[in-house]
Length: 85
Image (cartoon, rainbow, N blue to C red):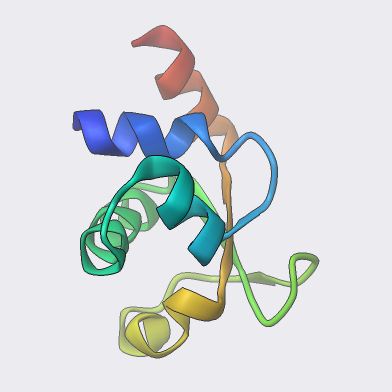
């Protein structure tokens, strides 16, 4: 897990929209997208769209189109890895 991914997980104890996550982590949107993609591929983060109550399975083909309108939450495995680092 990279330092940026650690910082992202640090903000995802609660469902958080993309824009707020970008602001809190200080990551540029494109960089945040890259890290979120990696975290989703590792099953360390869950995504929600079009609202914070509707979980959406990660799909590479649609991720780029909806990522900035999505919400994110650390998965149980993500929290475990974050807390044991």
